[in-house]
Length: 363
Image (cartoon, rainbow, N blue to C red; front, side, top):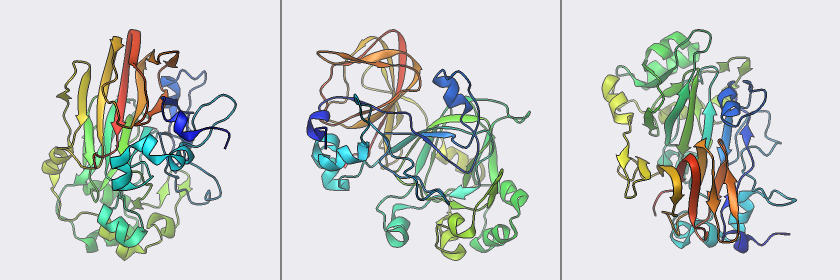
């Protein structure tokens, strides 16, 4: 390989934009954030940051989608390959001991122009049993902005309104009774600044006009209750991850909280961090799957997380990562990865810089 993986782990790594094809349309606000000259919605409504997870897209299995690439002079190696070559340097000894050489984290920018399918994600236990994967797909939503789509106020669907059995859910899915499935979930307005954690098994859907950072476990496992989204139709095999309807619908949590209790159980709140520039968004008390903080840089901000790997997304402003001999410029929408062995002095911004820093779980 032309690059020295261990040597690269001693510095922050700027990542290439990594747009991923999905069955729903969106992406306009990702373009706006990045200052693209012609922002528009399309079939690439997500950008995956610091990802060593491949996207699962029916009919596109021959493509390598979802894997982050590192921006280096003259080349763009996959972050996954760098980590595999020197896992302890990138992830830390404790992480490797607990999770192996796989980054136990996936972070996305997501902007919806149409409602995503009603869905649920597997737990770790389900994934181990049926999918040969140690990770499930608990996820969190950090809403950055919203917009009206064809006069529709932005919203999310979250948790069952009333107790529902697996048999009742199966009947709706078999009939593809979308109005009944929608009516079975809590519909709540989506507002900038709102934050939610969607634990494995909770039924949900992101409505149109919602722009967020999504922090989640590193998988693309999803059971879709709906087959038709916009112009794209899923096969039953893809909707049920090849498991069949009876096994797939076991993923839904039919015994969880209902109505407003479900919404309250999923709602996250901000907390003050140890440093004045740090706000805790997701902590160990919220989940053992990942953590996230917001950093507000005004002037100089020293590195707060030495010897800990994390993913960064710039959500507002501009600035730079400061190294001894150079700086790495940052602008809105940029993504980067800080290896556990990285040596840098922190961040600097004269005009103000906001970063979402997301972390794998503590072993």
